[in-house]
Length: 302
Ligand code: SF4
Image (cartoon, rainbow, N blue to C red; front, side):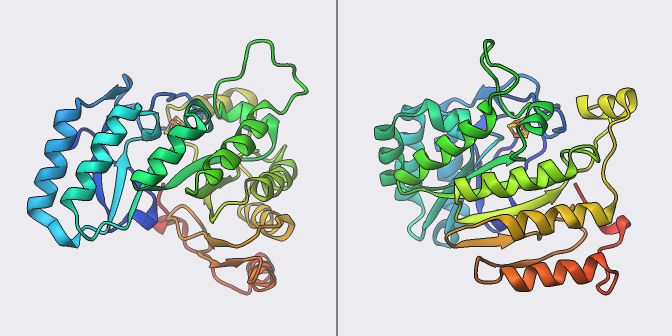
């Protein structure tokens, strides 16, 4: 009920009560990300404040709260005492609560033990949103999708593998996982490698929800500096659609809800993978050939 700075949440959390239990992102280094640069110092809100906010939301919304999203950028980092208190108080306060979710990095997940993830699932944390953005290791490094050990070689797939391990660990606890990829993240140079790597990583993570956003280079970010200094360029729209076609066509998922309904995308799509794969690929082919109109540039958002 009390918020600091801009709030971000996934599109599917539009009707959720948002509890801002942390301020900012503990990593805050991804080169394209501008979300928490207004909150450069990450901090955990005192637990008393978070519990008070839940109580206030209970008095205002009560029975109508079915979903709780815990913000900001990587709230899974909260320690177990915080999580226990939040989840227990939320369960007492919102009688209709059926889902608690948050953003997580692969590092946040790997830092929790199996027993801790099991306990969090048991207390009601049921969905993690994780954004590898790419499955191409070189692209992931350029995006700075997490710390790499100082001794890591240029050939290793440390960031790719940490996302696979994190997904397996979270799923073993019974949590659902939503994986987010970023069209254009490889630039023109690695467009194809980015798309193929992302299809491979999506397959290995095997999420319950899969979504794609389209990269916008935000002025002031490290990626914007790379763009002006090194000739790195964002692919044109047909190439972005071709990336999405490769990601969908080459992925092999068990059963995921797929969406490109984020405001950044040129073509909103939805369906289940693999059931609707042929239909989605066909739609993308028609969009690439110009048969299907795209969202106009002016109506796109970050
Ligand atoms: S982990 Fe997420 S919120 Fe944090 S810097 Fe990267 S993209 Fe931004």
